[in-house]
Image 1 (cartoon, rainbow, N blue to C red):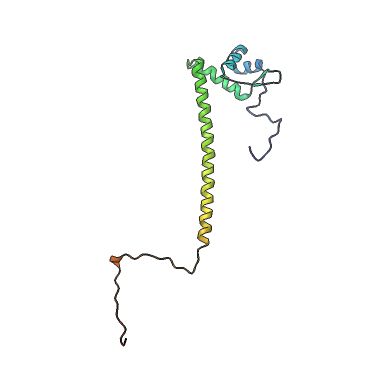
Image 2 (cartoon, one colour):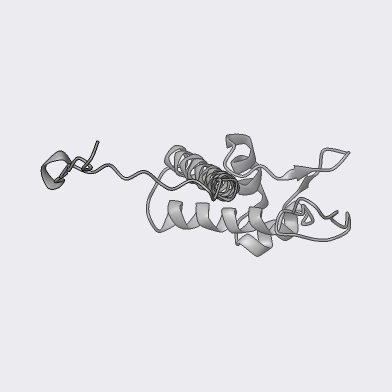
Length: 147
């Protein structure tokens, strides 16, 4: 989103807008469970100036994922925290790969442009030299008569 200014009132998936009671209802969890997940660092909602929790749509989705891993898959909270950390690390690495790929593409384009400039600067009165192999060349020398 670089290059254009974002509207400060525009809501995104990361906008912290839901109070804990609404987040609990949307996620299907008890508010005390949300507080516990916050204490454990599983889901860290935004905070208001008065330190009240505000959950985003992304936080709600993460709460649902934690619940699914815990209840359906039987994974303990420490394991879930590690899974979330690894998923975040993978996402960060994928973003970095995209950045580096774009940088490589830009460098390759600049190199091709510079190469074209170099080729355009060649003198046209020069003839390219081609090396002739010794085995394939036959030279016949005949002296001029009268010398």
